[in-house]
Amino acid sequence: MDINQLSMAEYVPAGAQATFWAYYRTLLDKADGGLPKRTDFDPLKIASVLHTMALSEFVDEDTQLVKLIGGGHDSLWPPSMTGENLFDHIDAGTAAVRKQAYKEIVGRPCGCFIEEEAIDEKGRTLFYTGLVLPTLSKKGKPTIFLGSYDFRADDLLMQLSGEVGIKSRRTKSVTYIDLGLKN
Image 1 (cartoon, rainbow, N blue to C red):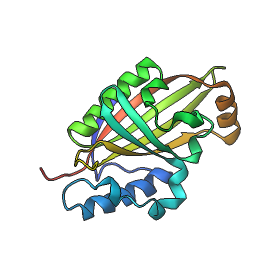
Image 2: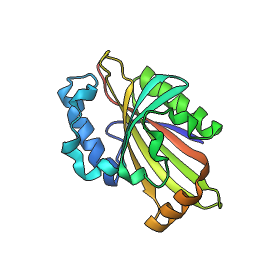
Image 3: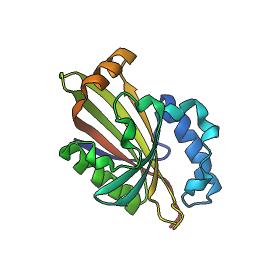
Image 4: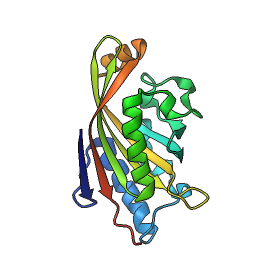
């Protein structure tokens, strides 16, 4: 697995993640050198990409509570996942990588771009990327994460994989994005 570091200027996303990134940068600008609050996020400003989005809360290193999942995830995650711990729904290896990434997001704070493969029960592979960006909780901590996920698979493969279930994931790379925050 590759681990990389990029500045905001070096990170150039594509597709829905480009829309999300551009909007998030406007929130950063309004936050005047700090992180935006979760309440600053207006989903209507990026309505065209909401199906790719997820909202979660970092509670501690073993708990990432799923608050909301966009419709583009329906075939790969159980509908009842909202309110549950993400780590209960992924394999231990992937959970370890995510836990480390989430600790970095909260600790620095920074953004994170993850490239992964999901392998279904029949051995089919779906490639996807995730852009995870922090916002401030009501307590002023960078523990509310907004994420946009881009699955690089056609609708049929997504449906078939959803029907049999994902058995494992493999992280190909993790890239931390310096958000240019003032200390």
